[in-house]
Image (cartoon, rainbow, N blue to C red; front, top):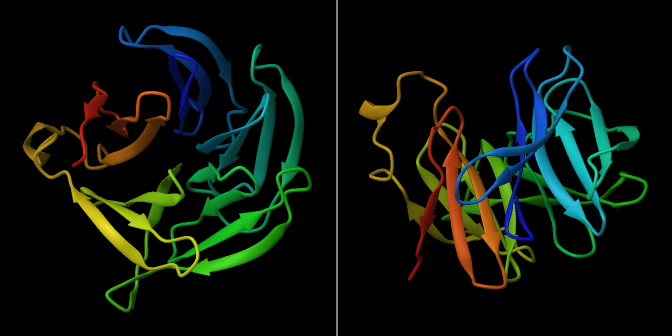
Length: 206
């Protein structure tokens, strides 16, 4: 997630999950919070002066102060947590299925479900999310595809094929897949990265 000239990142491996502030373009970690060893860090979104972080299968979410990364509270939710985005009114959660769940950003209770389709077929394995200029962007887990989703209908309206960005031959681990989207609205810059990737890419979309 991009904010104020750099990134906030949620990293996820059991026993190694973190929330961290990363300097751009050096990649230097400026601040870091370690998650409990029994949770797997996942989606992250900013809501005003707070950061909201999901975990994979534990049903635990965390709320932090944006400026200090101090833990403010913990909350519970149903199902798995994969990606998270904020559209200015609701948090949007993906859980690896074809359905996005909208949550109240204060009580973290579901307010709406959005079924996502591509050419009329359910699109499963929705993962990392970003809300960009009125549309939901999502990467499809274990693919090099990022889709753009109409939040009113759930239809995929366009997609990016990022196959050549970091070829599979350059990935030393099976889980080193595309898994990161960030957007700088001030300059309209788009960034993408991946799990266990050593690089973040700034890309231009026509």
